[in-house]
Structure formats: structure tokens, C-alpha cells
Length: 176
Ligand code: FES
View: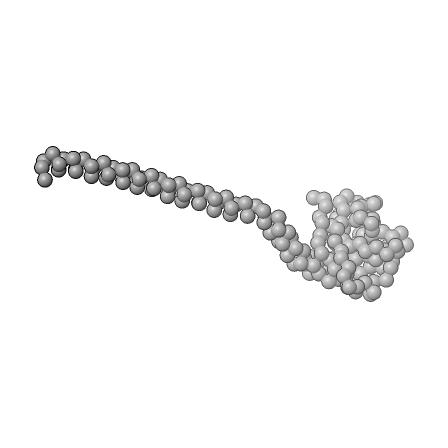
């Protein structure tokens, strides 16, 4: 092989090498791009899925909290109209009162007077909740103070009746 032929051949190989190298570089770029696109899509899908299912997770959590807070009080048949029973809710150290009103409604409150914590009783004559310590009166309908020293509402306990059984299912502390 002559020197001239060798030179041409080397030139040709060098050109082919360059083309191959450029091709490889482009391929690498494509792979990087594809990897990046895949990661972006995966992260996007995960975030979208997380956000989309968030309300269900929150609802499931709320349901669980409701179940945790649900506590049987008594059979409805054992609480005649115009009477009341005491129970503890949400813990054993928090006294509460359930009133079955003359109209057949069920109302429940924590029964520590919001003045100085004396127990509150159902007073049939007036259909009110009475604190005998300083003659504080609360409405049976909503637990708001009606007369006497108390200024704040009694905490309201949410009630549910299922298959003839009365349950406490939650509590609303409505005023600081
Ligand atoms: S403690 Fe109830 S009115 Fe004072």
C-alpha cells in the first residue's frame, strides 16, 4: 500500500470514527433526555396521585377519629322523654349529661358548669339545665347560658342513634 493510499484510508477511518462518535453522543443525549423525561413523569404522576387521593385519606382519617370517639351511652328505651342521664365523655373524667326532651329530642353536653365547674342538672319544671352552686341556668336546646353567673356555653356532645342505642360521637367546645 502506497503512502498516499494509507493517508486516504486513515482519513476515511477518522471521518467514520467522528460520525460514530457524534452518533454515540446524540444517543447518550437521547438516553439522558429520556431518563429525565421518565423521572419527571414519574414524579408528576406520584404527586398527582397523592393530591387526588388526599381527600380520601383525610376522610378515612376523620372516620377513624369518629370511630375512636364513638361511645355508647344507653339504650334509647331506657331514657324516657323529659328525663336525663349522666355519662362520661370523651374520657372517664369528663362528666356529661344526656337529656331526652319533652319534644323527643336528644341533647347532650359536658355538665361541668362553665362558671366554677359545679355539676349541672336537668330541671324538669323549667326544662333548663341548672347549676345549683350559684343558680346558673343553661338552655337545654343549645347549652347557652340563660341566667346567673355563667358566661360561656356548655360543650356540646354530638349524638347518634343506631339500632335503638344512643352514642356520643364527638364534642364541640364552642367558646374559649
Ligand atoms: S358554678 Fe355554676 S353558677 Fe357558679
